[in-house]
Amino acid sequence: MKKVLFNAIDPLGNEIKLLKETFEKHIVIRHPEMKSRIQDIKRAVKRPLYIGSGVKSKNSIIYLSVFPNPNTPYIIVAAKRIKKTNKIILTAFSAKNLGLNKINKILWQEKNPKNLIIPTLRPRKS
Image (cartoon, rainbow, N blue to C red; front, side, top):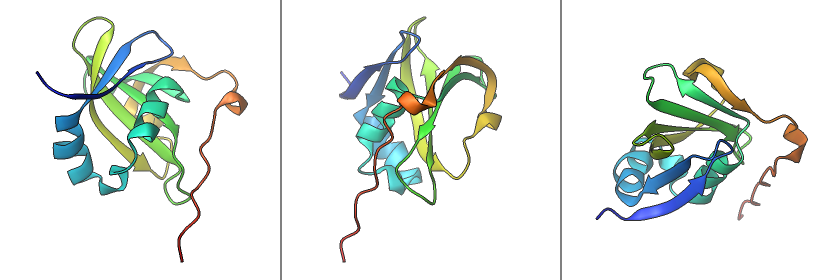
């Protein structure tokens, strides 16, 4: 059985899983800035700005949210459907723009972005 790093419920009621194998063998290798950002990935699923169907596949779902980095202030999380309301994360990465071009159709949108908990930047160690 594959180890699950987290289960999260998105605003549409879907259960989203991040597998340890996906995190270690794909996300961290291709997007090293995400190495210590499991909680940011989870937050992007639970409290996104947008949820949309993916451009590349009808079975994919994209989460767009904020990311605590001034150079790449957004996070994009892509998942695929494995059952009607169950999905598994394929990738997650930070981005300079919100990434609405990755969405075919908006399925859900935060009505009041001021309600989002935007993580604060951690102070740099000198």
